[in-house]
Image (cartoon, rainbow, N blue to C red):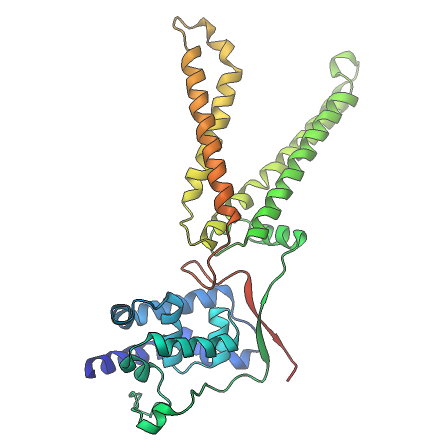
Length: 339
C-alpha cells in the first residue's frame, strides 16, 4: 500500500511540473474552450506520467476504460470538474455519474487513494480518510459559474466543406461521418460539373480545324481545361486527409487508406489505360490479350471489394469520447453566460 501511495505522489508531482497541468489549472481564467492540440497534449502527458499507475489499475480493475483512467488521474490532480469535462468532452453531470460508477469498479484501496475527500497538504502527500469521511457524500471541486453542457455540434454542407479546406493537408485528428460524406457529395458535384462543361465544349464550340483564325478558340478551350484540372486536383488532398481523419474517428490506423483507396484507384486507372490502348500491343510477337483481361478482372474485383469495405467502414459511427487520435468531434462542451 505504501508503494502505491509513493508512486501516486511521484506521478502527482511529475504532472504538476508540466505545461499541461498549468493549462488545466488556469482553464477558468481563460474563458474559452481547450483547443484540439491542448487536449491531445494533456492526454499524452497524462498517459506518459501516470503509465505505471495505469498498469497497476488495469491489473486490479480490468473493466476500467481508457477514459476512466484518464478521469482518475485528472481527479487525483484536483483538476476542476469543468476542466475535466472539457478534456473528456462530456457534461459535468456525466463527471458525477462517472465517479459513482468508479466507486463500483475500483477496489476500495484505489478509490480511497484516488478520490480523497480532503485536499492535499503542503507536502503533496495523500491524505487518509476516517470512517466518517468515507461515508460522507461525494464532493466535487467548485464548478465554474458558467453552465457547461454537452451538445452535438451540427455539421452543415457548407461547414463541412469549409472545414475540409481549412484542414487541407491535415492528416491528424478525427472527422465525423457527416463531414466525410458531405465532402464526397461535393466531389461528386465537381465531377458532374466537369463532365457537363466538357460536353458543352464538344457540342457548342466549333472545330478549330474548320476555322481560319482558330487561335482564340484554342486558347479559350485550353484555359477552361486547365481550370477544370485545377478544380479537380484541388479536391484530391482534402479528400485523402478527411478519409484518414474518418479512419481515426473509428480508432483505426490512417495508413489503411493506402489499401482501401489509394492503391485500388491507382491500379484501376492504370489497368483502364492499358485496356484502352491494347490495340497498340497487337504488334507484339506474343498474345497478351488474355493476360490483360485477367489482370483487369482482378483489379476490378479488388477495386470493388475495397470500395465496399470503405463505404461500410465510413458509414459506421466513430468511437464515443476521446480516443488515441483526439477528442470526439461530435460531442463538444458548450458554455453559456446564464447562471
